[in-house]
Length: 252
Image (cartoon, rainbow, N blue to C red; front, side, top):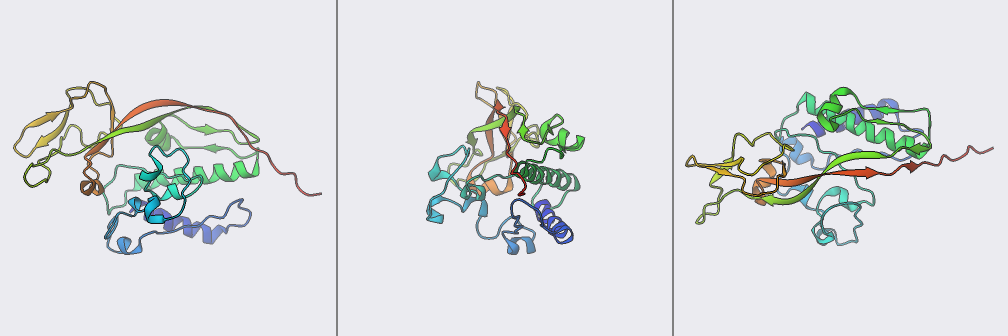
């Protein structure tokens, strides 16, 4: 529910401040009001899996989405330069002040950066607070704004594969849960031999891969129906080039 309350707060700010002077229009939308009313992520179908090329029946252009075009499913994939921000983990149907704060600061930073880049304004700077640094980037992110946006390096996680729950061969239902030592340890490095599942009979199942990888989306509630206990990701360092923003001259 943190994102739901964030949209409400942004709508309030939009009413108070207006949108005059923005370089790009901003539309705020609650995509599933029925689910919001019942305090659920979704009702009949996960909307974050509905945006396939087949379902949309229109051409979709994707930018840096690390899945084949035919497998693209999420909302941001339908736009030319889609961008999404997920902050967690957090339980469904609740609002947490820490998650809300980080989420809002991240959204504000993206909107401010876009506005400053479009305007080429050299006076404005974006500096994320130490709380966002600790939870999102592990270091202070400072973006100098102006006609040149300096490049740099950033760590990213690339999903390699998904891991399903152990299942009963007769019923097909999970026969184990995520091990307590793995629960809530998203992005931590998983080594060979680390416990990953605890069967309902009390047996510990360990990570058998030789390559250490980072588990993400561990025990996500909406993933039970998708057969995913967690994803495994490889961490890489990306080099970001400098960007040149051209500011239009004011008419004389």
